[in-house]
Picture 1 (cartoon, helix red, strand yellow):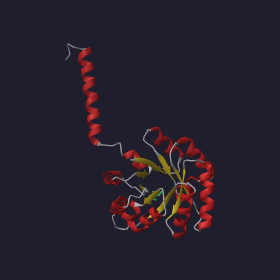
Picture 2 (cartoon, helix red, strand yellow; picture 1 turned 45 degrees about the horizontal axis):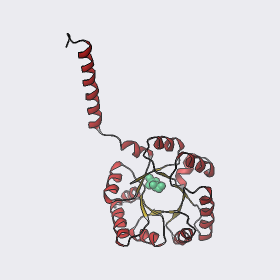
Picture 3 (cartoon, protein in one colour; picture 1 turned 90 degrees about the vertical axis):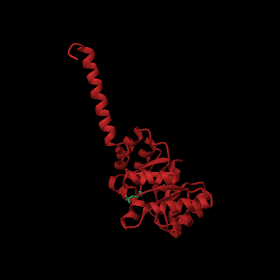
Picture 4 (cartoon, protein in one colour; picture 1 turned 120 degrees about the horizontal axis):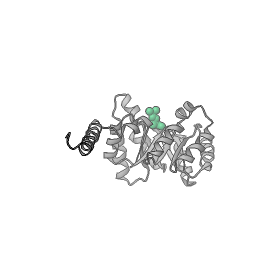
Length: 222
Ligand code: G3P
C-alpha cells in the first residue's frame, strides 16, 4: 500500500519524508491557500523533497481550461499528477490527458457510479473522500469497498486513493479492503506509530535494563 501525505505544508512534508514511509503527496486548493505561497514555487519545493507522485489540482471547470492548466502543471515535472474534479468537463479532460500520457487524480468522488465513470475515462487515481461521507452519516468505507469491488469486477487499472482520512482506523480498513493508496494528514501519520502497550513495554524494558546495570556495578547491594 502506498502512503501519501495530504498537505501543502513543507515542514510536514519534510518530516513525513524523513520517516522513510512516504510515497507521494496530495494537495488541493484549500490546502495550498492555507500556506499563502505561490503555487508554482510551492510545487517546486515539494518535488525537491519527495520523489513520487505529487497531485496538483486544476482550478478551471471547463474542458479547454482544465486541459490548459493540466498541460502546464504536467510540464513542471514527470511526478506531477493532475487533480481534476469529478464533473462532466473534468472527465472529458481526463480522457484527453490520458491519451497524452498525463497522469490524473479524479477528486471529489462521493459515489460508486462516479468512480466507475472516472475509471472508464481512464483516470490514473480515483479519490473517494471517506471523512466527508462519514460527516453526512453515511459510511465512507462502504463507498471504498464498493469502488474496489467494481474495479476488480472489470479489471480497471485506476488506482483507489482513499482521501479525506480522519483517523488511523480509516487507513486500517482501507488496507484490509486492498485500497492502493491512502493519503493522510500529517496528524494521522503521526498517530499510526502510537500504542500505549508499546510505551509501557518500552518503559519496563529500559527500567529492567537499568536494574541490571545497578546489579552489575554494585553486586553486594543487590
Ligand atoms: O485532499 C483531498 C481530501 O483528502 C480532503 O480531505 O479532510 O478536507 O475532507 P478533508
